[in-house]
Length: 238
Image (tube, rainbow, N blue to C red; front, side, top):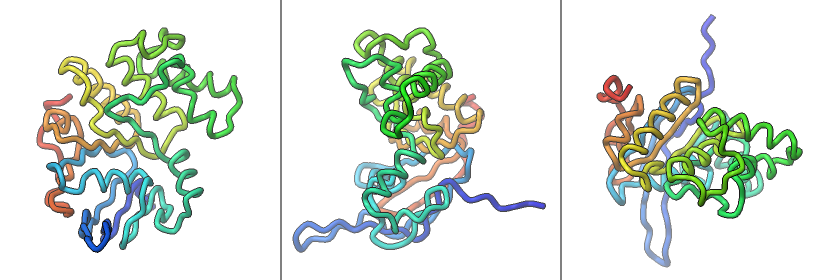
């Protein structure tokens, strides 16, 4: 018997309007798509296309003006601020262009930070952080601070931190924007490995070379989805 699984991400006719005084800006104008568990999706679009607004909504940093957004089956639009913060902590992992690591804190403590906020005990959270550092290839760098790590290693620490609470979705916003081409390729191979091990990944990027690593590309323009297709470069990215 085939049971339909709840999508990781499900947007239905989502709009987002920002108001500045009497001016209204419609950043999203009716976006509908679903992302299943285990997918690897790139969201692309030019500046002003609405992709950053879309990323904020998917990341439960904002709510839609109209329409419905369900994250792992939960209607985000019905949540108050405290519940929104809780779902971000439990269901989402974030990776940013700027790494966003605590400068004076070791790699293992950086990775363990989400578990600290979740109320996990010291030993359990540091054990979990050590396992995640090993998964991203940094088992021997746990005591190093960010300034003792290369840019690629810092991003690996950030990826480990994003995954330590086993989120339903990993969100990556221009994850290679501060890296050289060789290191970028290494990070994208890591994302590929994580996806092949079952992780759901959504990546926002303007870079076609980065997007080619995803298995599906959603293109946004003027607040609308204008294309949603399998990545034509998927095989060459392996």
